Image (cartoon, rainbow, N blue to C red; front, side, top):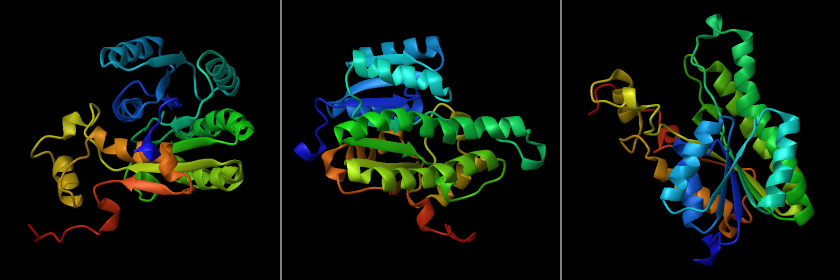
Length: 261
């Protein structure tokens, strides 16, 4: 369908070298978009580019720190000169530090806020300026379920993602008049390399997630593709400032009673 066709579009996915970022990037590529990825580590970037190309995708990679205002500004300028205008931006790069609040160093808290909240502001600022000039653009911020829920040991992450949710709404408020749609995706619990050690039958956290999720399973990274393509395409041209939670239904329910099978 033409509504979902991304042919001729260029999509920048920060942190698109692995996991959910790579899954979303490949989905955009399958829909016709030119893929542009970023990472702060050169070797990680090279390895990801090789994986994309082996899978048949046309990809460009750029190394820069998303928290560095000057570096981001230079990188966006270079990308638009070498590849072309950025039509789609996915602010995916992020970190998490699982530490009880009473034990967490302020420097660690600040680092999470820098990467998960301030970096999307910086990257969006530079990409947004050019989108405003062209009166067109799509921006997707990865907001997480932790923009709605709290959990032990993730105070900094939840604070950053809650802030990103509100930044998404404010960006939409400021930029909708320029035909720019800014929305968020809030993934639930997904099967990635990072979660592999706890996704084994009998592990308490695995059992908790399976029982807590109405769909009864962890998300597969490909489960994000449909929402990503939708929010990147003409199909979502009148949707702005919304957060779509791709979570198997977790946020819809209080959970199963303890005696329910």
